[in-house]
Image (cartoon, one colour):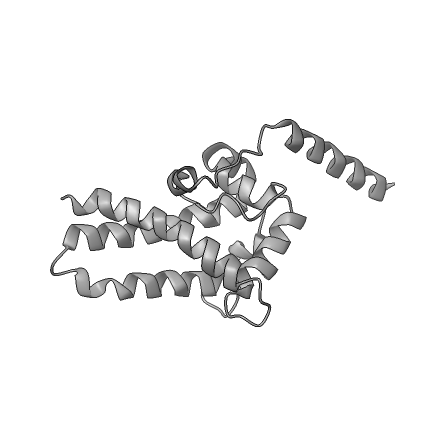
Length: 173
C-alpha cells in the first residue's frame, strides 16, 4: 500500500521533469518531436486566454493532443514490468497518468474551472514567464523546486487583463 503515495509523488515529480526538460527544453526546438507542446499548444493557449479548442477533437491523431496521449500511454507502458512486484504503485501511476490527461484537457476547455481548480497551470500559460509552474495536477514539485510563482489574482494579472480587454475593444471598433 505504500506504493500509492509513492506513485502519486512520483507522478507529480514526473510532470515537473517532463514539462520542464522535455516539453519546454527539447520542445522549443521546432524540429523536435516535442515542439507540438510549446509551439502549437502554448501559442494557441496564449492567444485564446487559456483555452485550447483542439482538445474538442479526437485524441486519436498526429496532432498535439494525440502526441500528448501517446506519450502518456508510453509512460504507462514503460512501467508495466513493475506490475508483478509493485502492483499498488503501478496501478496508481497509471491512474495518475489518466488523471493528468483528463485534468489537462478540462483546464483548456473550461478556463473558469482551471482558474478555480488549477490556478498554477493557468499561471504557467498566462503568466509573464511560461518557464515556471511546471506541474499540472498538483503544484507540489513546483513548491519544492521553487518554481511556483503566482500570477492569477495579482496586480500584474489584473493589469494584463485590462490591457488585453482594451486591445480587443479597440480592434472591434
